[in-house]
Length: 261
Ligand code: BTN
Image 1 (spheres, rainbow, N blue to C red):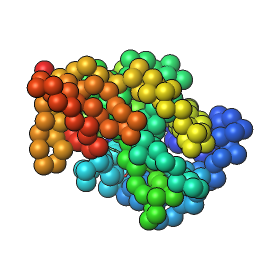
Image 2 (image 1 turned 180 degrees about the vertical axis):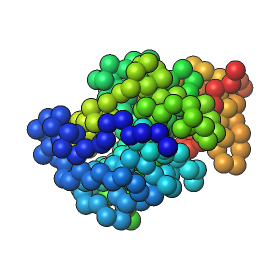
Image 3 (image 1 turned 90 degrees about the vertical axis):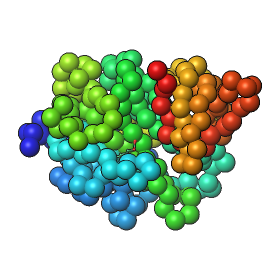
């Protein structure tokens, strides 16, 4: 097992948050190990709680996949958030979360990353992080789960079954996880606080700037069919727009998308 570099610490994370974020947050729970921070947050957290773990034994990914979660090197973070009332553009929440993560990386002087619809943080064609939203019964409460590959090197990530990278591999030096978590919370809570007043034009522009699929020929697997076409951005419902060579257009709500080479 690799040594824990700098441990995650609630006090250290809090110390770096601005007053608006501190006000919006409730507790920050940090565990040496959990099965899944999302599972724990769904069962134990109250609104505004944050849950972090040094490792996960059953980290959850999209579409029932497992999220590889080795100890002491990455960020496994869940935030439980409550909306009253449920905002009309709730389907955009996972994309808005992606924007917050991308902005937080920029705050930490990391550049060159982008967002791959719907939920992936990408760098140079490799996955850097993922987002998994889970609803708590009614849609008024959600758990926002974020996994980021931070100081993971090839050995620890050997079991990951897709191209991946980590911030340390990009930056060439270890990244302080408490600083990164603070940056993510700051950006995420700012976007959550303003979510019911989402500026659609600004949101579209922010996404467009970071959209790694835009203008690329892609293959999209929806679960039942595979489609091939030109990725042409997202619409106001957060659906991926695909243009086909016969001139037709489809808007996808959910799919696994890869760029065709
Ligand atoms: C994906 O498949 O891309 C989504 C991965 C989400 C992983 C994070 S790690 C923190 C949180 N807890 C989980 O069990 N999953 C999410």
